[in-house]
Image 1 (cartoon, rainbow, N blue to C red):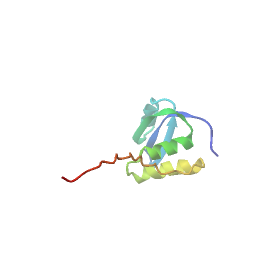
Image 2: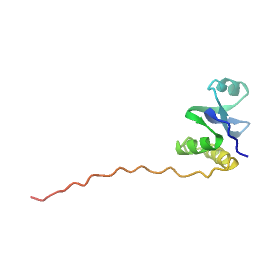
Image 3: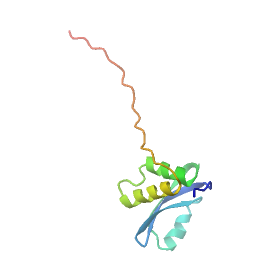
Image 4: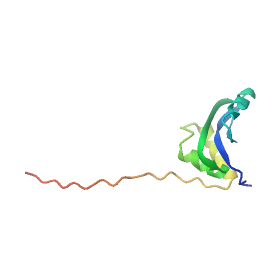
Length: 104
């Protein structure tokens, strides 16, 4: 069931070989995670408070996983759990001005 609680910091950690997406409101959470044995801790500040479903889409658009299948699977799991269908990031295309050329 999706919640409406919002978070300002998110990221991924690995504990006992299992990678998960973490949610919090203070980057100082990193100390608690480290103390409890988490590895590969990677937290980022969000541009605005977001729900877990919004965070899943944001991390997907940001390419937060950077090719790491464990992190990508964790993002997809959060999206599925929060009833979000991840949408591929739309490529931004700039209009190229037409230049008229004449042969001399």
